[in-house]
Image 1: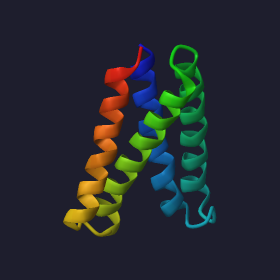
Image 2: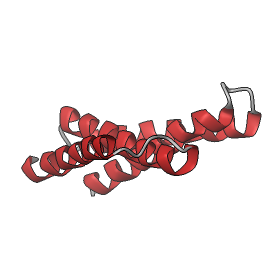
Image 3: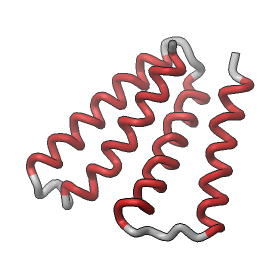
Length: 105
């Protein structure tokens, strides 16, 4: 169950990271509120996952999910670069996430 909570925490990390763009430097109240709410939920879920998972593994997976999700949404929503090299390195992060899951006790 802790892995599912951790994945959900990572998805909320993506939400708050993308929310930063929409909040325009915290100058727009509704996107700012959504960003802060997603941040709080993400942290609470991460804290819950760490009750059962090793903190180093959980943190690495959480940030990895956030990095991959934010990078992919940046490509889709904000026309960020989708160069083969960039996609390959995003893939390396995914391999790391899967690897950490596979070797975790």
